[in-house]
Length: 617
Picture (cartoon, rainbow, N blue to C red):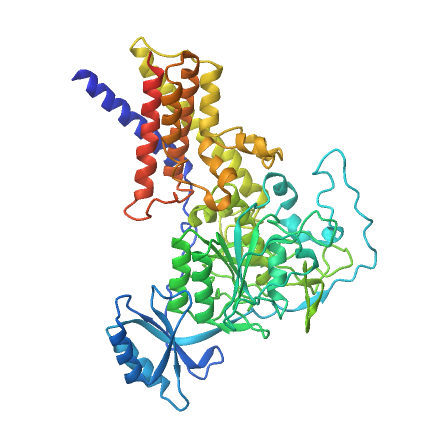
């Protein structure tokens, strides 16, 4: 009985240590440094230019049957069109026939018990100035790039016009590229479409959709979407043109804006759900409007709850009101800076701003390079989609994809939960005013190098520290009983491989080397290299299964027992780190009733218990 009591006290002590480590290291949550204003859904005027003249958005109760739907059609005189991605949620566009009383139909719908919400359909657009551009003219061409035989990173990247991309240096990309290039992460660009221009060759475009014309032809006929996609993932170090942030990421082109740069909220909400259901891990929306929409807010929440990071432009009105969808909870709202790191004259500000990023200002040349200080990328020539060239754009539209690109780097490094990604971006941001937050910069200018340092070095240190604490507790308990394995190189090697790996390798630019890439992470995170970015946090890797399997095979061989004990402890520490820091959603484990957390807790403790059993002679 006395022995059982000591074991219980020992376990409680371990749990208390975990909680203490978590409390000290967790920092402030993503919502703690700002407060979002309450979203009010005031009645909009039918004559307002932001309102579609003949359509409503209707969200029916999910259990509404066909008979109730037919009754609504007959009572209102509206035709109901089910959205592509809204079958489960029963979201419809209700259109009025000519001369129909749309306002009267709206009131009838709001009174129906079958209707969760009904609202005027809004029209969102590229923020003002978002399409203002200057064509790149290089009067002094850069010399042909010469490959460096000694190092991939000296003179990297070799894109000739990279020298004019001050905006990539402002977010510390040169150092971040050594660590991570966003390999395999799917970023949805919800915009005017994407066209494969000359400097996007080699960048993978996954299956997209045209929500404007209801087909799979997502070709950009405006230029804005292709420019945005270039900032996220322009082909880099290919000796052509310019560079992009997460140049090994994949782009999902979703066209919701027409050639005029505007589109309906219903199509935008449909595209968000499509992206979340088809493998996107990051969504960029460089668009917006003045009025909120319940259907759009619900779509943003849907994507966020499915583990998608949603990044949005704050708007270019130069006023203290953040546009929608950037102002919704679950979205990262981005303001814009220029070369001198001040926020731009056009950038919106407010309580919802999360971070800032380079948006540019083509009306000045603060760096004296003879070029306007816009964001330079490759896109189509306005008015002639068959041709492409390099253009300086400016706007929060350009700031948002910088953050989306850095978010893709963070996701590729193993932090996939949207709130955890947001937290990393905020805690690593550089604030020019040396404060934690203000309404213009949010937490500060996004810093790719700092963000990746946090997900590699900082997280690695915590994982290794937890493993060392567990190891000490287990070995002390074993030694108290006069038993135990010798603590030597094998035990420590197993501890490191299971928990953090050689995490410093990523900061040395070796994280992408095939074998070294595995060793740069604790064993559970090897799933990213085996299964790709979309397979991270696989339940088979994030469990006690592999340590138990190896123990079953090698337990009888004395020389392996120290290695096995250290490995099991390391895996347990890695799982418990994921539990308390909540950095990823465990795949194949239902995400309700805290089943993810229960899975990690039980498997983490099981791994520690397994190590204790192995450590005993």
